[in-house]
Image (cartoon, rainbow, N blue to C red; front, side):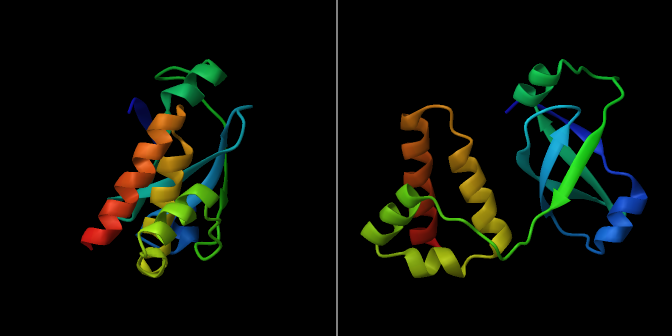
Length: 135
């Protein structure tokens, strides 16, 4: 995946009070909101990945000054896509999926939701089910 990483200011990381990944909704300049995680890089710092699609939409490139707005998401408030739930039920692993950490569930769901083509989405759902079956 093509992306760039932007350093999160230290005072924001300190306010988050965690060295773990933090799910957020972000806006870059005037972009549509997008789901992403602030990811830890050590030393009490976080970065945020900005996908090429968002950079293209906002016409930003390396070295540009940007405005980034983030809203921290409640890790426990997870919305499950109907097609993922159907696949999990069919494989009898819904309980196991919901036992995964909220961060892991959110990552899997975000990856599924970011699929541009229906066949890619279906494959990512199949992959998620297989991963849960193996764990």
